[in-house]
Amino acid sequence: MAIRNIVQLGDPTLRKKSFEVTDFGEKTHQLLDDMKETLIKADGAGLAAPQVGVLRRVFIVMAEGKYFECINPVIVSQSGTQSGEEGCLSVRGKYGAVTRPNKVTVKAFDRFGKPFTVKAEGFLARAFCHEYDHLDGIIYVDKADYVKGEND
Ligand code: CO
Image (cartoon, rainbow, N blue to C red; front, side):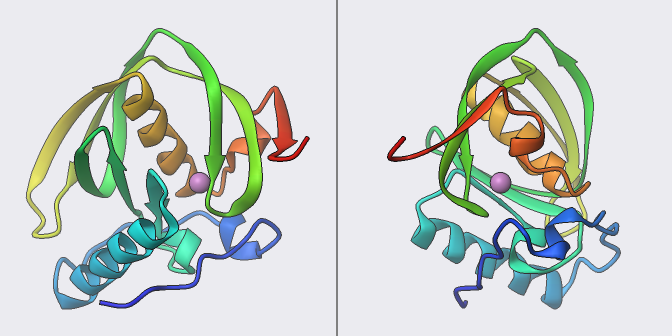
């Protein structure tokens, strides 16, 4: 495993639409392992592949004691709303308030190409939505009611 560099807002990679994954082999496993190590080191709740410069529809979420690896994810249903603050490892030192669905159902594939469905609510639902947006080049600051620096 290896720590990968997390690109920051302003890097054009973050604004591109990621491509579907067709390879569920060694290269994708390496990417996932590296992303996990990178996320743990950065002490974040989630990380999407474009944040490490890879335009593939892959993200991971690590929150509330759970860990998910989602490949080619689709948000198949959502309900309710929640408003709260979030940050992003690609927007260092800032946080902002974003309205998100309170509940989501996500369908995705695991690293071996096996489909699974996960239902999430609250913070976990927020994390899935935030990471999903990265795959379409959307950053939370685009949707935020406000963005503040940590020292503002
Ligand atoms: Co982010």
